[in-house]
View (cartoon, rainbow, N blue to C red):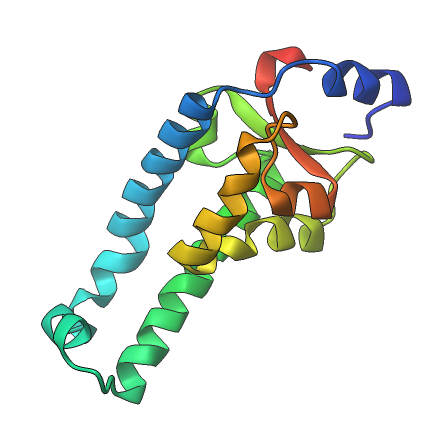
Length: 150
């Protein structure tokens, strides 16, 4: 969907969804990711070893990388094709581009911080500025809006 300049300006002048809405939408997505992506890999990951052993074997690192990549792909695919993940759908918020229809790379890049909890926290700290955007939202020229505002 290509947004006209007046529609984009109207959206930019409205408030972003509350942090609570975004947080709970994210929690729902994390629950889904745990059930669909992480749970099938449980037998391949020994969490006791990860938490206590300094040397982690290559297979564990590979499995954790695959889980992280699939997590980013979950967010990117849903946001690219539907403009929202399941959590965002429930809370009636969605991702838009400030320039019209977002590209897949734009959406993928805005979600790359979800590959690591620490990187995601750093990305989210930017939310507390007046813009209500994550840092990667700003870099990728995307934003999260209330669905009923469009």
